[in-house]
Length: 148
Image 1 (cartoon, one colour):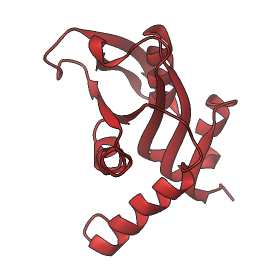
Image 2: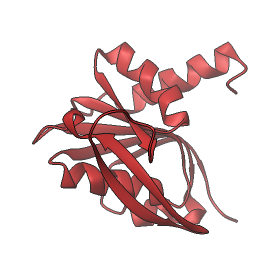
Image 3: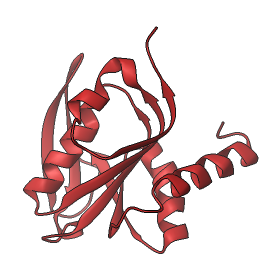
């Protein structure tokens, strides 16, 4: 899909349409495909963008969260000065599967004084439980695949 300019443009436009009624200040994009979809959305909406990186990639002081994966653990980091008390975030990524990374991002943002008010995903694999892990969150997905 990323090879097709038309498909990429369609995907980003569809994600923008899906969140047109959401009030937020800043877009969060988890490494790395969250950057691909989140940055053009932020640009189009005139919003700021905060990258969520793997441990050791950001140059300034960071907030971090260690979380469990199906096969071990991982750490995400966000610059401490990127989150202000009461700030509202839209989390953007290509895929919602098990939801572990998204939940860790939400938890970290909350610890840092902000709130993730909604999520935007291109694809949701609902049979893998991410939507249940994020129960109560406003999740907007363009394509949903269910387990048969």
